[in-house]
Length: 95
Image: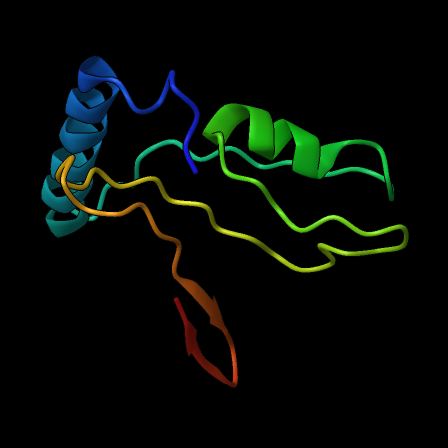
């Protein structure tokens, strides 16, 4: 579930603008900025992504998120339920 800061009318408006920019710039072959998080095991990479996005990532005692991860926030109408779509190469889509 998104944090309150991301689920405000202003945040939803800004996410909609980002989605629109992504669509327009994709046609022009221009990418929006990306954030890359790299580091040793158990130093807080997932925590950084959680803090930025408000989305909880899997937790475990040992290595857990040992894979490339693309997290893309999208605006949805306020009457819809928040959800995440997870795609893994070679595995059916999970929602």
